[in-house]
Image (cartoon, rainbow, N blue to C red; front, side, top):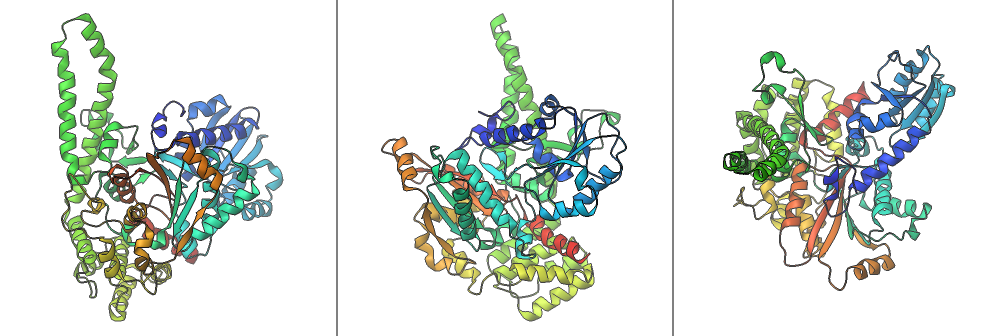
Length: 603
Protein backbone atom coordinates (compact mmCIF):
# COMPACT_ATOMS: atom_id res chain seq x y z
CA UNK A 1 0.00 0.00 0.00
CA UNK A 2 1.23 3.52 -0.77
CA UNK A 3 1.82 5.88 2.10
CA UNK A 4 -0.41 8.83 2.87
CA UNK A 5 -0.57 11.34 0.02
CA UNK A 6 0.27 8.80 -2.68
CA UNK A 7 -2.73 6.47 -2.64
CA UNK A 8 -3.42 7.32 -6.31
CA UNK A 9 -0.25 5.43 -7.27
CA UNK A 10 -1.93 2.17 -6.27
CA UNK A 11 -4.90 2.59 -8.61
CA UNK A 12 -3.32 1.34 -11.83
CA UNK A 13 -2.76 -2.08 -13.42
CA UNK A 14 0.07 -2.66 -10.91
CA UNK A 15 0.73 -1.00 -7.55
CA UNK A 16 3.32 1.56 -8.61
CA UNK A 17 3.22 2.92 -5.06
CA UNK A 18 5.44 -0.02 -4.10
CA UNK A 19 8.27 1.51 -6.16
CA UNK A 20 7.93 4.73 -4.20
CA UNK A 21 7.92 2.85 -0.89
CA UNK A 22 11.04 0.87 -1.80
CA UNK A 23 12.87 4.07 -2.77
CA UNK A 24 11.84 5.80 0.48
CA UNK A 25 13.09 2.90 2.59
CA UNK A 26 16.43 2.79 0.78
CA UNK A 27 16.94 6.56 1.16
CA UNK A 28 16.09 6.53 4.86
CA UNK A 29 18.42 3.58 5.39
CA UNK A 30 21.27 5.57 3.85
CA UNK A 31 20.44 8.60 5.98
CA UNK A 32 20.34 6.56 9.17
CA UNK A 33 23.89 5.36 8.55
CA UNK A 34 24.94 8.95 9.26
CA UNK A 35 24.00 9.10 12.94
CA UNK A 36 23.17 12.56 14.28
CA UNK A 37 22.02 15.83 12.76
CA UNK A 38 22.33 16.33 9.01
CA UNK A 39 22.14 18.93 6.25
CA UNK A 40 21.35 17.86 2.70
CA UNK A 41 23.01 19.75 -0.16
CA UNK A 42 20.98 19.13 -3.31
CA UNK A 43 22.03 19.03 -6.91
CA UNK A 44 19.10 21.24 -7.97
CA UNK A 45 17.59 19.07 -10.76
CA UNK A 46 17.15 16.26 -8.20
CA UNK A 47 14.98 18.18 -5.72
CA UNK A 48 11.63 17.86 -7.52
CA UNK A 49 12.37 14.23 -8.37
CA UNK A 50 12.93 13.43 -4.69
CA UNK A 51 9.78 15.33 -3.71
CA UNK A 52 7.86 12.58 -5.55
CA UNK A 53 9.13 9.93 -3.13
CA UNK A 54 9.70 11.63 0.23
CA UNK A 55 8.44 14.64 2.21
CA UNK A 56 10.64 16.99 4.24
CA UNK A 57 8.68 16.11 7.39
CA UNK A 58 9.86 12.49 7.03
CA UNK A 59 13.44 13.59 6.41
CA UNK A 60 13.28 15.63 9.63
CA UNK A 61 12.31 12.51 11.54
CA UNK A 62 15.61 11.01 10.37
CA UNK A 63 17.82 13.87 11.50
CA UNK A 64 17.72 16.26 8.52
CA UNK A 65 17.66 19.80 9.91
CA UNK A 66 18.77 21.93 6.95
CA UNK A 67 18.66 21.74 3.15
CA UNK A 68 20.75 23.77 0.70
CA UNK A 69 21.17 23.97 -3.07
CA UNK A 70 24.52 22.91 -4.47
CA UNK A 71 26.36 26.08 -5.47
CA UNK A 72 29.98 27.17 -5.31
CA UNK A 73 31.62 28.89 -2.38
CA UNK A 74 30.86 28.46 1.32
CA UNK A 75 27.75 26.77 2.64
CA UNK A 76 25.54 28.67 5.07
CA UNK A 77 26.46 28.14 8.70
CA UNK A 78 24.72 25.26 10.45
CA UNK A 79 25.20 23.27 13.64
CA UNK A 80 24.69 19.88 12.01
CA UNK A 81 27.18 17.06 12.36
CA UNK A 82 26.89 15.64 8.83
CA UNK A 83 26.88 17.38 5.44
CA UNK A 84 25.43 15.09 2.75
CA UNK A 85 25.75 16.02 -0.92
CA UNK A 86 22.98 14.45 -3.03
CA UNK A 87 24.12 14.73 -6.63
CA UNK A 88 24.09 13.31 -10.13
CA UNK A 89 27.39 11.78 -11.26
CA UNK A 90 28.60 14.88 -13.12
CA UNK A 91 32.11 16.28 -12.98
CA UNK A 92 30.94 19.92 -12.77
CA UNK A 93 29.10 19.10 -9.55
CA UNK A 94 32.33 17.74 -8.06
CA UNK A 95 33.94 21.16 -8.52
CA UNK A 96 31.17 22.77 -6.48
CA UNK A 97 31.31 20.08 -3.79
CA UNK A 98 35.07 20.60 -3.45
CA UNK A 99 34.55 24.34 -2.93
CA UNK A 100 31.94 23.65 -0.22
CA UNK A 101 34.27 21.25 1.60
CA UNK A 102 37.37 23.45 1.34
CA UNK A 103 35.59 26.56 2.63
CA UNK A 104 33.97 24.84 5.62
CA UNK A 105 35.62 26.13 8.80
CA UNK A 106 33.72 24.01 11.33
CA UNK A 107 34.45 20.34 11.84
CA UNK A 108 31.94 18.32 9.81
CA UNK A 109 31.59 14.84 8.38
CA UNK A 110 31.07 14.95 4.63
CA UNK A 111 29.23 12.35 2.56
CA UNK A 112 28.18 12.01 -1.08
CA UNK A 113 25.07 10.16 -2.28
CA UNK A 114 25.37 9.63 -6.05
CA UNK A 115 22.05 9.31 -7.91
CA UNK A 116 21.49 6.91 -9.66
CA UNK A 117 25.05 5.52 -9.72
CA UNK A 118 28.66 6.25 -8.77
CA UNK A 119 31.09 7.50 -11.37
CA UNK A 120 34.81 6.73 -11.71
CA UNK A 121 35.38 10.10 -13.37
CA UNK A 122 33.73 11.90 -10.44
CA UNK A 123 35.84 10.03 -7.87
CA UNK A 124 38.95 10.83 -9.90
CA UNK A 125 37.99 14.52 -10.01
CA UNK A 126 37.50 14.63 -6.22
CA UNK A 127 41.02 13.19 -5.81
CA UNK A 128 42.45 15.78 -8.20
CA UNK A 129 40.78 18.54 -6.19
CA UNK A 130 42.26 17.16 -2.96
CA UNK A 131 39.00 16.51 -1.13
CA UNK A 132 38.57 12.73 -1.54
CA UNK A 133 40.14 12.05 1.87
CA UNK A 134 37.76 14.54 3.52
CA UNK A 135 34.78 12.34 2.66
CA UNK A 136 33.49 10.03 5.36
CA UNK A 137 31.55 7.96 2.82
CA UNK A 138 30.55 7.77 -0.83
CA UNK A 139 27.20 6.02 -1.37
CA UNK A 140 25.07 5.12 -4.36
CA UNK A 141 21.31 5.72 -4.25
CA UNK A 142 19.82 3.76 -7.13
CA UNK A 143 16.82 5.90 -7.89
CA UNK A 144 16.65 4.35 -11.34
CA UNK A 145 13.01 5.17 -11.96
CA UNK A 146 10.32 7.26 -10.24
CA UNK A 147 6.52 7.03 -10.43
CA UNK A 148 4.92 10.09 -12.00
CA UNK A 149 1.43 8.61 -11.80
CA UNK A 150 -0.41 5.32 -11.41
CA UNK A 151 0.58 4.19 -14.91
CA UNK A 152 3.67 6.27 -15.75
CA UNK A 153 7.30 5.77 -14.66
CA UNK A 154 10.24 7.93 -15.67
CA UNK A 155 14.00 7.66 -15.25
CA UNK A 156 14.27 11.46 -15.66
CA UNK A 157 17.25 11.27 -18.03
CA UNK A 158 16.40 14.19 -20.36
CA UNK A 159 19.60 13.96 -22.43
CA UNK A 160 19.68 10.19 -22.90
CA UNK A 161 18.73 10.47 -26.59
CA UNK A 162 21.35 13.05 -27.56
CA UNK A 163 23.97 11.35 -25.37
CA UNK A 164 23.42 8.12 -27.25
CA UNK A 165 23.06 9.46 -30.80
CA UNK A 166 25.60 12.28 -30.72
CA UNK A 167 28.17 11.53 -28.02
CA UNK A 168 28.01 7.73 -28.28
CA UNK A 169 27.37 7.49 -24.54
CA UNK A 170 25.32 4.31 -24.15
CA UNK A 171 25.14 4.30 -20.34
CA UNK A 172 21.40 5.01 -20.47
CA UNK A 173 20.86 1.68 -22.30
CA UNK A 174 22.39 -0.16 -19.34
CA UNK A 175 20.43 1.98 -16.85
CA UNK A 176 17.18 1.10 -18.65
CA UNK A 177 18.01 -2.60 -18.22
CA UNK A 178 18.84 -2.02 -14.55
CA UNK A 179 15.53 -0.20 -14.02
CA UNK A 180 13.68 -3.08 -15.70
CA UNK A 181 15.50 -5.55 -13.46
CA UNK A 182 14.29 -3.57 -10.43
CA UNK A 183 10.72 -3.70 -11.73
CA UNK A 184 10.98 -7.47 -12.20
CA UNK A 185 12.23 -7.93 -8.66
CA UNK A 186 9.23 -5.92 -7.44
CA UNK A 187 6.52 -7.33 -9.70
CA UNK A 188 7.81 -10.72 -10.79
CA UNK A 189 9.52 -11.99 -13.94
CA UNK A 190 7.94 -10.67 -17.15
CA UNK A 191 7.03 -13.67 -19.29
CA UNK A 192 7.34 -12.17 -22.78
CA UNK A 193 9.73 -9.50 -24.02
CA UNK A 194 9.25 -7.82 -27.40
CA UNK A 195 11.05 -4.88 -28.90
CA UNK A 196 11.58 -2.69 -31.95
CA UNK A 197 14.29 -0.21 -32.83
CA UNK A 198 18.08 -0.11 -32.73
CA UNK A 199 18.66 -0.65 -29.00
CA UNK A 200 15.74 -2.85 -27.94
CA UNK A 201 17.87 -6.00 -28.26
CA UNK A 202 20.77 -4.39 -26.34
CA UNK A 203 18.45 -3.60 -23.41
CA UNK A 204 17.13 -7.17 -23.45
CA UNK A 205 20.67 -8.59 -23.42
CA UNK A 206 21.74 -6.32 -20.54
CA UNK A 207 18.59 -7.27 -18.62
CA UNK A 208 19.36 -10.96 -19.01
CA UNK A 209 22.95 -10.40 -17.83
CA UNK A 210 21.95 -8.31 -14.79
CA UNK A 211 19.26 -10.81 -13.80
CA UNK A 212 21.78 -13.65 -14.00
CA UNK A 213 24.41 -11.76 -11.97
CA UNK A 214 21.85 -10.90 -9.27
CA UNK A 215 20.50 -14.45 -9.10
CA UNK A 216 17.06 -13.23 -10.14
CA UNK A 217 16.41 -16.41 -12.08
CA UNK A 218 15.16 -17.72 -8.74
CA UNK A 219 12.59 -14.90 -8.48
CA UNK A 220 9.44 -16.55 -7.12
CA UNK A 221 7.27 -13.42 -7.02
CA UNK A 222 3.95 -13.87 -8.80
CA UNK A 223 4.20 -12.12 -12.19
CA UNK A 224 2.02 -9.02 -12.41
CA UNK A 225 3.29 -7.75 -15.77
CA UNK A 226 2.58 -10.12 -18.64
CA UNK A 227 4.46 -8.50 -21.50
CA UNK A 228 7.26 -5.98 -21.99
CA UNK A 229 7.55 -4.02 -25.25
CA UNK A 230 10.71 -1.94 -25.69
CA UNK A 231 10.43 0.89 -28.23
CA UNK A 232 13.46 2.92 -29.31
CA UNK A 233 12.61 6.60 -29.92
CA UNK A 234 14.52 6.50 -33.22
CA UNK A 235 11.74 4.26 -34.52
CA UNK A 236 9.38 7.27 -34.50
CA UNK A 237 10.81 10.79 -34.53
CA UNK A 238 7.72 12.28 -36.15
CA UNK A 239 5.32 11.99 -33.21
CA UNK A 240 7.35 14.18 -30.79
CA UNK A 241 7.79 16.82 -33.52
CA UNK A 242 4.01 17.22 -34.01
CA UNK A 243 2.27 19.61 -31.59
CA UNK A 244 0.33 17.77 -28.89
CA UNK A 245 -3.35 18.77 -28.74
CA UNK A 246 -4.49 17.02 -25.56
CA UNK A 247 -5.02 19.10 -22.40
CA UNK A 248 -1.93 17.69 -20.66
CA UNK A 249 0.11 17.77 -23.85
CA UNK A 250 -0.69 21.44 -24.49
CA UNK A 251 0.23 22.35 -20.91
CA UNK A 252 3.60 20.74 -21.57
CA UNK A 253 3.96 22.52 -24.93
CA UNK A 254 3.10 25.95 -23.50
CA UNK A 255 4.51 25.87 -19.96
CA UNK A 256 6.36 22.60 -19.48
CA UNK A 257 5.62 19.87 -16.96
CA UNK A 258 8.49 18.71 -14.78
CA UNK A 259 8.19 15.87 -12.30
CA UNK A 260 4.38 15.96 -12.58
CA UNK A 261 4.28 19.70 -11.73
CA UNK A 262 3.28 22.63 -13.93
CA UNK A 263 4.24 26.25 -13.29
CA UNK A 264 1.98 29.11 -14.37
CA UNK A 265 1.79 32.91 -13.99
CA UNK A 266 0.57 33.39 -10.41
CA UNK A 267 -1.47 36.51 -11.18
CA UNK A 268 -3.96 34.37 -13.10
CA UNK A 269 -4.78 32.39 -9.94
CA UNK A 270 -5.31 35.16 -7.37
CA UNK A 271 -8.14 37.23 -8.81
CA UNK A 272 -9.88 37.54 -5.41
CA UNK A 273 -6.81 38.86 -3.62
CA UNK A 274 -5.59 42.41 -3.28
CA UNK A 275 -2.54 43.27 -5.40
CA UNK A 276 -0.32 43.51 -2.32
CA UNK A 277 -1.33 39.95 -1.34
CA UNK A 278 -0.30 38.47 -4.67
CA UNK A 279 3.03 36.74 -5.05
CA UNK A 280 5.47 37.22 -7.92
CA UNK A 281 6.55 33.59 -7.90
CA UNK A 282 4.94 31.15 -10.31
CA UNK A 283 1.94 29.11 -9.27
CA UNK A 284 2.87 25.44 -8.98
CA UNK A 285 0.14 22.89 -9.67
CA UNK A 286 0.55 19.13 -9.21
CA UNK A 287 -0.74 17.40 -12.32
CA UNK A 288 -1.55 13.84 -11.34
CA UNK A 289 -4.59 11.59 -11.03
CA UNK A 290 -4.75 12.57 -7.35
CA UNK A 291 -6.64 15.57 -8.75
CA UNK A 292 -9.91 14.00 -9.94
CA UNK A 293 -10.76 16.81 -12.34
CA UNK A 294 -7.32 16.68 -13.95
CA UNK A 295 -7.76 12.92 -14.29
CA UNK A 296 -10.93 13.62 -16.31
CA UNK A 297 -9.31 16.34 -18.45
CA UNK A 298 -5.74 15.24 -19.09
CA UNK A 299 -6.26 12.88 -22.04
CA UNK A 300 -9.00 14.88 -23.78
CA UNK A 301 -8.41 16.87 -26.94
CA UNK A 302 -8.37 20.51 -25.83
CA UNK A 303 -11.53 21.21 -27.84
CA UNK A 304 -13.38 18.84 -25.46
CA UNK A 305 -12.14 20.52 -22.25
CA UNK A 306 -14.59 23.45 -22.19
CA UNK A 307 -17.77 21.33 -21.92
CA UNK A 308 -16.25 19.26 -19.09
CA UNK A 309 -15.36 22.40 -17.10
CA UNK A 310 -18.85 23.80 -17.71
CA UNK A 311 -20.48 20.57 -16.50
CA UNK A 312 -18.23 20.45 -13.42
CA UNK A 313 -19.10 24.06 -12.56
CA UNK A 314 -22.80 23.19 -12.68
CA UNK A 315 -22.29 20.09 -10.48
CA UNK A 316 -20.38 22.01 -7.81
CA UNK A 317 -22.95 24.80 -7.75
CA UNK A 318 -25.73 22.25 -7.29
CA UNK A 319 -23.85 20.63 -4.38
CA UNK A 320 -23.36 23.97 -2.64
CA UNK A 321 -27.01 24.86 -3.23
CA UNK A 322 -28.06 21.75 -1.31
CA UNK A 323 -27.55 23.78 1.89
CA UNK A 324 -30.81 25.57 1.13
CA UNK A 325 -32.66 22.24 1.35
CA UNK A 326 -31.24 21.22 4.74
CA UNK A 327 -34.18 20.54 7.09
CA UNK A 328 -32.68 18.55 9.94
CA UNK A 329 -29.57 18.31 12.14
CA UNK A 330 -28.60 15.03 10.47
CA UNK A 331 -28.80 16.57 7.00
CA UNK A 332 -26.69 19.48 8.23
CA UNK A 333 -24.07 17.06 9.59
CA UNK A 334 -23.95 15.23 6.26
CA UNK A 335 -23.57 18.53 4.42
CA UNK A 336 -20.75 19.68 6.72
CA UNK A 337 -19.06 16.28 6.39
CA UNK A 338 -18.98 16.66 2.60
CA UNK A 339 -17.84 20.29 2.74
CA UNK A 340 -14.03 19.68 2.65
CA UNK A 341 -14.38 17.55 -0.50
CA UNK A 342 -16.60 20.21 -2.08
CA UNK A 343 -14.05 22.91 -1.27
CA UNK A 344 -11.26 20.75 -2.72
CA UNK A 345 -13.28 20.25 -5.91
CA UNK A 346 -13.99 23.97 -6.12
CA UNK A 347 -10.29 24.84 -5.75
CA UNK A 348 -9.37 22.29 -8.43
CA UNK A 349 -12.02 23.71 -10.76
CA UNK A 350 -10.66 27.23 -10.23
CA UNK A 351 -7.12 26.03 -11.02
CA UNK A 352 -8.07 24.21 -14.20
CA UNK A 353 -10.34 26.99 -15.39
CA UNK A 354 -7.37 29.37 -15.10
CA UNK A 355 -5.04 26.91 -16.81
CA UNK A 356 -7.56 26.31 -19.62
CA UNK A 357 -7.84 30.08 -20.15
CA UNK A 358 -4.05 30.33 -20.43
CA UNK A 359 -3.95 27.44 -22.91
CA UNK A 360 -6.79 29.01 -24.92
CA UNK A 361 -4.79 32.22 -25.25
CA UNK A 362 -1.78 30.15 -26.38
CA UNK A 363 -3.76 28.21 -29.00
CA UNK A 364 -5.56 31.30 -30.31
CA UNK A 365 -2.35 33.04 -31.35
CA UNK A 366 -1.67 33.43 -35.05
CA UNK A 367 1.73 31.79 -34.58
CA UNK A 368 0.20 28.64 -33.05
CA UNK A 369 -2.51 28.33 -35.71
CA UNK A 370 -0.01 28.81 -38.55
CA UNK A 371 2.26 26.16 -37.00
CA UNK A 372 -0.60 23.65 -36.76
CA UNK A 373 -1.61 24.41 -40.36
CA UNK A 374 1.92 23.72 -41.65
CA UNK A 375 2.18 20.52 -39.59
CA UNK A 376 -1.10 19.23 -41.05
CA UNK A 377 0.07 19.98 -44.58
CA UNK A 378 3.39 18.22 -44.05
CA UNK A 379 1.75 15.18 -42.44
CA UNK A 380 -0.55 14.93 -45.46
CA UNK A 381 2.42 15.12 -47.85
CA UNK A 382 1.58 18.62 -49.11
CA UNK A 383 4.46 20.96 -50.02
CA UNK A 384 7.13 18.83 -48.38
CA UNK A 385 9.60 19.12 -51.27
CA UNK A 386 9.92 22.91 -51.44
CA UNK A 387 11.02 25.79 -49.21
CA UNK A 388 8.23 26.56 -46.73
CA UNK A 389 7.02 30.16 -46.71
CA UNK A 390 6.08 29.86 -43.04
CA UNK A 391 9.52 28.53 -42.01
CA UNK A 392 11.05 31.41 -43.98
CA UNK A 393 8.83 33.85 -42.06
CA UNK A 394 9.91 32.29 -38.74
CA UNK A 395 13.55 32.77 -39.74
CA UNK A 396 12.89 36.37 -40.74
CA UNK A 397 11.19 37.08 -37.36
CA UNK A 398 14.05 35.23 -35.60
CA UNK A 399 11.65 33.00 -33.72
CA UNK A 400 13.19 30.48 -31.25
CA UNK A 401 15.59 28.19 -33.08
CA UNK A 402 13.93 25.14 -31.51
CA UNK A 403 10.66 26.03 -33.26
CA UNK A 404 12.37 26.49 -36.63
CA UNK A 405 14.36 23.27 -36.35
CA UNK A 406 11.32 21.33 -35.12
CA UNK A 407 9.35 22.28 -38.25
CA UNK A 408 12.36 21.75 -40.50
CA UNK A 409 12.94 18.22 -39.12
CA UNK A 410 9.26 17.40 -39.62
CA UNK A 411 9.46 18.57 -43.25
CA UNK A 412 12.59 16.47 -43.76
CA UNK A 413 11.04 13.28 -42.34
CA UNK A 414 7.74 13.64 -44.23
CA UNK A 415 9.66 14.20 -47.50
CA UNK A 416 12.11 11.30 -46.94
CA UNK A 417 14.91 13.86 -46.77
CA UNK A 418 15.24 17.38 -48.18
CA UNK A 419 16.41 18.17 -51.68
CA UNK A 420 20.06 19.37 -51.58
CA UNK A 421 19.11 22.83 -52.84
CA UNK A 422 16.35 23.22 -50.22
CA UNK A 423 18.56 21.91 -47.41
CA UNK A 424 21.45 24.25 -48.31
CA UNK A 425 19.10 27.23 -48.37
CA UNK A 426 17.72 26.44 -44.90
CA UNK A 427 21.22 25.75 -43.55
CA UNK A 428 22.56 29.10 -44.86
CA UNK A 429 19.63 31.04 -43.40
CA UNK A 430 19.86 29.35 -39.98
CA UNK A 431 23.59 30.07 -39.69
CA UNK A 432 23.05 33.67 -40.85
CA UNK A 433 20.17 34.21 -38.40
CA UNK A 434 21.31 32.33 -35.28
CA UNK A 435 25.11 32.11 -35.56
CA UNK A 436 27.92 29.92 -36.84
CA UNK A 437 27.86 27.64 -33.80
CA UNK A 438 24.70 26.09 -35.23
CA UNK A 439 26.72 24.44 -37.99
CA UNK A 440 27.34 21.83 -35.28
CA UNK A 441 23.65 21.84 -34.31
CA UNK A 442 22.67 20.99 -37.87
CA UNK A 443 25.36 18.32 -38.03
CA UNK A 444 24.00 16.83 -34.80
CA UNK A 445 20.48 16.67 -36.22
CA UNK A 446 21.80 15.02 -39.38
CA UNK A 447 23.74 12.46 -37.35
CA UNK A 448 20.66 11.71 -35.23
CA UNK A 449 18.51 11.06 -38.32
CA UNK A 450 16.31 14.14 -37.92
CA UNK A 451 17.68 16.22 -40.79
CA UNK A 452 18.20 13.30 -43.11
CA UNK A 453 16.23 10.07 -43.60
CA UNK A 454 16.64 8.03 -40.41
CA UNK A 455 16.93 4.82 -42.42
CA UNK A 456 17.91 4.04 -46.02
CA UNK A 457 14.52 2.43 -46.73
CA UNK A 458 12.47 5.11 -44.93
CA UNK A 459 9.36 6.06 -46.93
CA UNK A 460 6.92 8.24 -45.01
CA UNK A 461 4.05 8.12 -47.49
CA UNK A 462 4.06 4.32 -47.59
CA UNK A 463 4.25 4.13 -43.78
CA UNK A 464 1.48 6.76 -43.44
CA UNK A 465 -0.90 4.88 -45.71
CA UNK A 466 -0.06 1.38 -44.44
CA UNK A 467 -0.55 2.31 -40.77
CA UNK A 468 -3.34 4.85 -41.37
CA UNK A 469 -1.42 7.54 -39.51
CA UNK A 470 -3.56 10.35 -40.93
CA UNK A 471 -7.27 10.06 -40.19
CA UNK A 472 -9.51 12.51 -42.05
CA UNK A 473 -12.67 12.41 -39.94
CA UNK A 474 -11.97 12.84 -36.21
CA UNK A 475 -14.56 13.52 -33.53
CA UNK A 476 -12.40 15.36 -30.98
CA UNK A 477 -15.09 15.29 -28.27
CA UNK A 478 -16.05 11.64 -28.69
CA UNK A 479 -13.04 10.02 -30.37
CA UNK A 480 -12.99 6.57 -31.93
CA UNK A 481 -9.32 6.57 -32.91
CA UNK A 482 -6.02 7.50 -31.25
CA UNK A 483 -5.48 10.17 -33.95
CA UNK A 484 -7.59 12.54 -31.80
CA UNK A 485 -4.48 13.38 -29.71
CA UNK A 486 -3.10 15.37 -32.68
CA UNK A 487 -6.48 16.17 -34.28
CA UNK A 488 -5.95 13.81 -37.20
CA UNK A 489 -2.50 12.27 -36.79
CA UNK A 490 -2.05 8.96 -34.97
CA UNK A 491 1.31 8.67 -33.17
CA UNK A 492 3.25 6.00 -35.07
CA UNK A 493 4.46 4.44 -31.79
CA UNK A 494 0.92 4.09 -30.42
CA UNK A 495 -0.37 2.71 -33.74
CA UNK A 496 2.36 0.06 -33.57
CA UNK A 497 1.18 -0.88 -30.08
CA UNK A 498 -2.41 -1.07 -31.31
CA UNK A 499 -1.36 -3.47 -34.07
CA UNK A 500 0.88 -5.38 -31.64
CA UNK A 501 -2.21 -6.11 -29.55
CA UNK A 502 -4.20 -7.21 -32.60
CA UNK A 503 -3.54 -8.66 -35.14
CA UNK A 504 0.19 -8.66 -34.26
CA UNK A 505 3.41 -7.28 -35.73
CA UNK A 506 3.74 -10.14 -38.20
CA UNK A 507 0.90 -8.54 -40.13
CA UNK A 508 3.07 -5.47 -40.88
CA UNK A 509 6.49 -7.04 -41.52
CA UNK A 510 6.80 -5.09 -44.78
CA UNK A 511 6.24 -1.80 -42.92
CA UNK A 512 8.87 -2.63 -40.30
CA UNK A 513 11.44 -2.98 -43.09
CA UNK A 514 10.93 0.74 -43.77
CA UNK A 515 11.48 1.73 -40.11
CA UNK A 516 14.86 2.30 -38.42
CA UNK A 517 16.14 -0.68 -36.48
CA UNK A 518 14.73 -4.17 -36.49
CA UNK A 519 12.03 -6.07 -34.64
CA UNK A 520 13.63 -8.42 -32.14
CA UNK A 521 12.36 -11.97 -31.88
CA UNK A 522 10.06 -12.39 -28.85
CA UNK A 523 11.83 -13.67 -25.75
CA UNK A 524 9.99 -15.99 -23.37
CA UNK A 525 11.89 -15.50 -20.13
CA UNK A 526 10.52 -18.27 -17.98
CA UNK A 527 8.07 -20.98 -19.04
CA UNK A 528 7.43 -21.92 -15.39
CA UNK A 529 6.50 -18.37 -14.42
CA UNK A 530 4.31 -18.17 -17.52
CA UNK A 531 2.41 -21.25 -16.35
CA UNK A 532 2.21 -19.78 -12.85
CA UNK A 533 0.65 -16.58 -14.24
CA UNK A 534 -1.93 -18.50 -16.29
CA UNK A 535 -2.75 -20.83 -13.46
CA UNK A 536 -3.07 -18.15 -10.82
CA UNK A 537 -6.12 -16.59 -12.44
CA UNK A 538 -8.13 -19.58 -13.45
CA UNK A 539 -8.87 -20.73 -16.96
CA UNK A 540 -9.63 -17.33 -18.47
CA UNK A 541 -7.48 -14.22 -18.58
CA UNK A 542 -9.55 -11.02 -18.29
CA UNK A 543 -6.69 -8.51 -18.42
CA UNK A 544 -3.28 -8.42 -20.09
CA UNK A 545 -0.83 -5.98 -18.47
CA UNK A 546 1.78 -4.67 -20.91
CA UNK A 547 4.74 -2.53 -19.88
CA UNK A 548 5.78 -0.25 -22.77
CA UNK A 549 9.28 1.16 -22.27
CA UNK A 550 10.34 4.09 -24.48
CA UNK A 551 14.11 4.46 -24.78
CA UNK A 552 14.73 8.13 -25.60
CA UNK A 553 11.53 9.67 -24.28
CA UNK A 554 7.75 9.68 -24.70
CA UNK A 555 5.23 12.50 -25.11
CA UNK A 556 2.06 13.08 -23.11
CA UNK A 557 0.08 12.70 -26.35
CA UNK A 558 1.52 9.19 -26.84
CA UNK A 559 0.65 8.33 -23.22
CA UNK A 560 -2.92 9.57 -23.82
CA UNK A 561 -3.14 7.43 -26.95
CA UNK A 562 -2.07 4.32 -25.03
CA UNK A 563 -4.61 5.08 -22.29
CA UNK A 564 -7.25 5.39 -25.00
CA UNK A 565 -6.30 1.93 -26.27
CA UNK A 566 -6.67 0.58 -22.71
CA UNK A 567 -10.23 1.90 -22.56
CA UNK A 568 -11.12 0.85 -26.10
CA UNK A 569 -13.18 -2.32 -26.35
CA UNK A 570 -11.63 -4.83 -28.78
CA UNK A 571 -13.76 -7.85 -27.98
CA UNK A 572 -10.74 -9.76 -26.63
CA UNK A 573 -8.95 -9.62 -23.25
CA UNK A 574 -8.72 -6.12 -21.81
CA UNK A 575 -5.37 -4.44 -22.46
CA UNK A 576 -3.83 -2.40 -19.62
CA UNK A 577 -0.71 -0.37 -20.33
CA UNK A 578 1.97 0.81 -17.94
CA UNK A 579 4.29 3.34 -19.60
CA UNK A 580 7.94 3.69 -18.63
CA UNK A 581 10.47 6.00 -20.23
CA UNK A 582 13.89 7.56 -19.95
CA UNK A 583 12.10 10.94 -19.78
CA UNK A 584 8.95 12.82 -20.77
CA UNK A 585 9.66 14.89 -23.88
CA UNK A 586 8.03 17.17 -26.43
CA UNK A 587 9.32 18.45 -29.76
CA UNK A 588 11.00 21.50 -28.24
CA UNK A 589 12.80 19.60 -25.48
CA UNK A 590 13.92 16.90 -27.91
CA UNK A 591 15.38 19.43 -30.37
CA UNK A 592 16.83 21.54 -27.56
CA UNK A 593 18.78 18.55 -26.21
CA UNK A 594 20.73 18.46 -29.48
CA UNK A 595 21.25 22.23 -29.55
CA UNK A 596 22.36 22.36 -25.90
CA UNK A 597 24.62 19.35 -26.15
CA UNK A 598 26.32 20.91 -29.17
CA UNK A 599 26.85 24.18 -27.30
CA UNK A 600 28.21 22.33 -24.30
CA UNK A 601 30.68 20.36 -26.35
CA UNK A 602 31.79 23.35 -28.42
CA UNK A 603 32.26 25.65 -25.43
